[in-house]
View 1 (tube, rainbow, N blue to C red):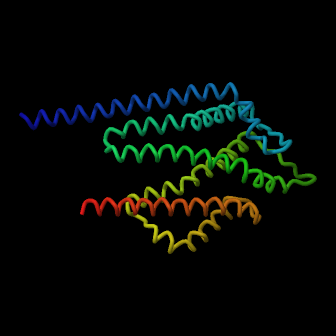
View 2 (cartoon, rainbow, N blue to C red):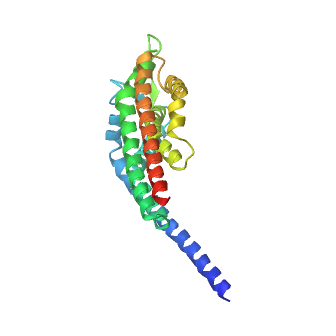
Length: 248
């Protein structure tokens, strides 16, 4: 009888968690929807901002609905990006009750760092690297070969470009997380630094136009991020070592 009651309590707890998750997902969807509607009212200004780096570039659309649908997708993307802190907060609030106090502090710091690095990476990609990439691609224009970009392809290119930099700037946090799980160590990162430089150079060559200056613009921040990640792993190891000394 007691075991059945315990099982019922566990099932209620499980369904309670599902209900809380459902409410948080609904809240995320509503906030993104509202933000997207607001962004749609300013979609022309957002599009002007995205074409700001493309001097005198005129966009075209080749189907009747392409311009409207592209602006809808742009508004939704902008809404999702602007509400990213709220989305991450809802995810964090859902898992927080299962964490210890020390873990909660680490997760909050991780969340703030993720948001900061993501938007920092997007800003770096758009303001620093993207102008050189666009100049390279526009350089193929000549008499009889005009650069006519459709609005859908241009928006897709710009958004994927800057979001990629936002993701790349998460490298230090990835290293910290892997170091926290003892999957990698600072000594491993130091010993394999030369291989990391090679991988970074290859990634830079793939992600940027094939000119040395643009590749250097990509290599420098990635190397800085690599060293920051190494430092975070080292600090994690020192903290773990101090805790082990206290326990012993």
